[in-house]
Image (cartoon, rainbow, N blue to C red; front, side, top):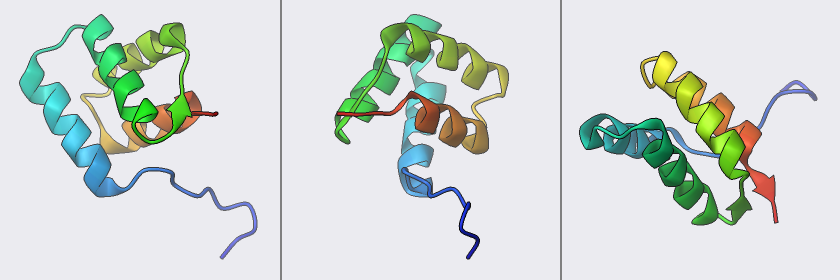
Length: 80
C-alpha cells in the first residue's frame, strides 16, 4: 500500500444509501446540503453549511456520482 494512499472515510454502502435518498427525494440544493450535514454529523463530523451547499451543487452536477460524493464528503467532513 502506498504511504500517500487516501483512506476512505465512508463505505460504498453508506454512499449508495445516501445517493438513493438524494435521487428519490427530489431535493433542491439546500435540502441536499442539510442531508449531507445530517449524514456527516451522524458519523461524528462537523460541516460548514455553506460548503455543504456548494458541494451539493457539484454532486448534483456529476449526476450523483459515487466517486464525486466520496471526494466531496471527505472534503466537507471536519473532525470534531
